[in-house]
Length: 166
Image (cartoon, rainbow, N blue to C red; front, side, top):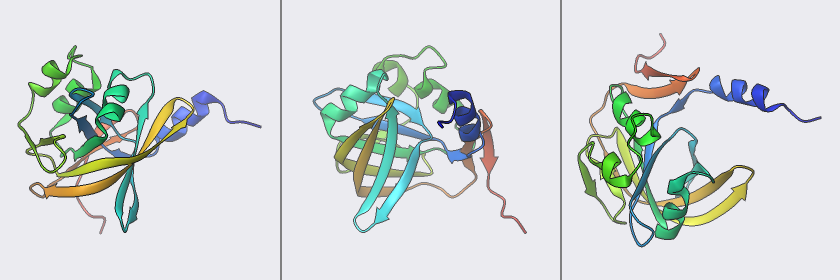
């Protein structure tokens, strides 16, 4: 017996996750999107897993570049998340990257200057599973931003997280 799509989507809505901008640049072109399907795989070598919808216009560019940066957003950066999610009408890379202050670390992927943390990665492997590409990416450089509350996606909306439970 399989789980229905609506039930699966409702279950995922109840799985809170950090909000990140996944960015890339190189021969495939500049690309960026908002994602919450990001997690650690191992700390030796430091590796992340990033899931991106195969129908996303950004997917092919990121594959073509072979690099990506996970820019974890802080509380208060919802509007930037909305820009990269395509909710504001910004559909081209030029339009999206007009928002925010961008630099680069090792790979050349765009790094958001005021992200909570940015992890600059080389893509080691891509697994195609259902509707998504699963990118396994080795971290080559990390830049830490100012400490503060996190931006979380939970129950189909933004939330701020930053107060420890007593």
